[in-house]
Length: 623
Image 1: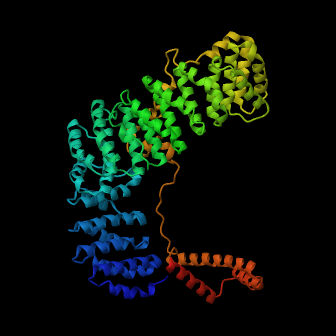
Image 2: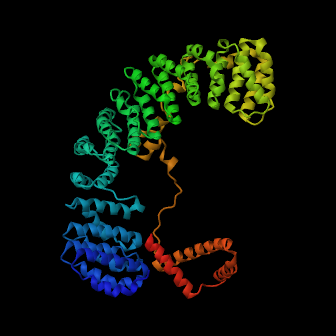
């Protein structure tokens, strides 16, 4: 609503000594300035008078109001009192002037000269910590196109001495900048560490993680010191973890996992911190289960496996699936735990009422069978009892892998393969993974029982060579067919190689823990989104995103324009409602149709427009 007619009266009211009333008057004048920039000049005189008021609260309020006049045409009236405010005796006024410069920079960047920037640089060493940190923030924003403001050693030392007086947000901001200024000498390094050591006792996780990032970054070239730093970070992170909400706990678990990978055994005694709580959400449960597997050692693996076994009857399928996967990973990483892991997975195959448990368990057992071939004797004979319950394609492929490698343990192995090959011949959709296992498994069975499997193999080659839906599978089939036709011994050697895990002494993928994390070097990106997403910045940051460009605020973009838009929108919705009324009340259809045509072809009458505006205002008041 246009209230500019009251501006003269309100300006007179700004002479009050009541600070609350003055603040309300200033808010009104700022709103009027956005509505009508021409009338804002009338309020500038009042603001300039209050900039010389004896009270620092009034001076600061006046500077804040001046810098909030969103019009580039008024920048010349605003910049001079703002620059004078930078040298005011009151820290509150200096802070208001500094923040005012940031607002002016967005509206009229060219109005800030080098002299102002130099004076702002001097304010970084101001005795008031709020003035110092805000000066640093504004300088970074003003010089963003030039790569930001570069702190000197004097600035760093001054802000470090005042860091305990900064609020939590400003501490996090300063610490995030400080990480890019490593000390030049070991003496400086340990001196800074002594000052920052107290930040680990903070209850704010942002401060603790930002400090941890500094310690890790500054010791990247000092392996021995970094090792001590990693051990020093353990207790602050565990302390935060015990009292954090789920969202923050998830982030902390991800940070702890990075340290656990770089320092195996660091949390070997504290694994109970990562046990699942009843109220934990699904995403947190999954990460905790992964962390439990990561921190397990020979002394704690039995307790962790027992804990994971208790999770298998949970109703959360994603969580249960993750727990089973980690049981299999533990068996591969810690050989002494393989028997207990096999016992847990073997018993989970009896849970016929939980097909997802059986599917995930058979995948884990298939991976274990490559390293521990003897476990197949306990698993393969049970396949007929649960095969009909499995619907997951990856689990079916794992079953075919186990049968193909151990067909002598199951008399009906060839019949199971023949069933899937017949389904393939009838046009049933099979995944490439299942097709590949049928191909390699049938060949392995042939070299063990040629007479029995030859008809099945012939049928398989016939079906697979006529299927062009998956080029890779077709090419692999053609390769095996030609090799089988020309040199059966070579074919036997090829399909049998790699059936057993680690028989040639080479390193297998299962032995490499978290290859992606080592490639990302997450320790160098600690306390960042990369450490949470486990992705490089290029994967989640858009390089082609347009830079922020400050556009001049058009005088036509006013409250009146926004109100007109609201009225138009309301008018359209009213027409829609009337259309509904036409369907419900045919007797008034003709009248509404005439009203619709009038609205579409001409401007509404003044009385109708005024009525619509009043109704829109009433709705706004109600909202």
